[in-house]
Image (cartoon, rainbow, N blue to C red; front, top):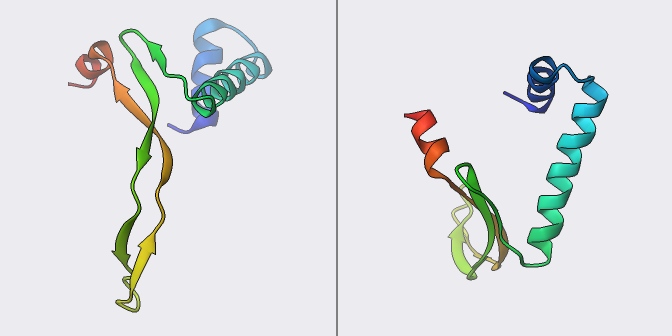
Length: 90
C-alpha cells in the first residue's frame, strides 16, 4: 500500500474527503519528523515507537569496483512495532 492508497482507504472508512485525509496524514508525518529532529521519541501504544539512533562510521565496499570506502556515521530514524501491530501481522 502506498500513500495514495492509504489516503483512499482512510477516506472511505471515515467518510471524509481525500483532501482532509491528506492534510491529516501529511501533518502526522511532519509532526513525527519534527519530534525526531528535536531528539524526542514518539510512542503510540499498541502501534509502535519512533526514535533516533546514532550510527557509527564504518568501512564498506563499493560492489562495482571492489574499492573500500568510508561510510560516515550519523543519526537515522528507527521504528519498533508495538504488540498489537505485531499480533495483527501474525
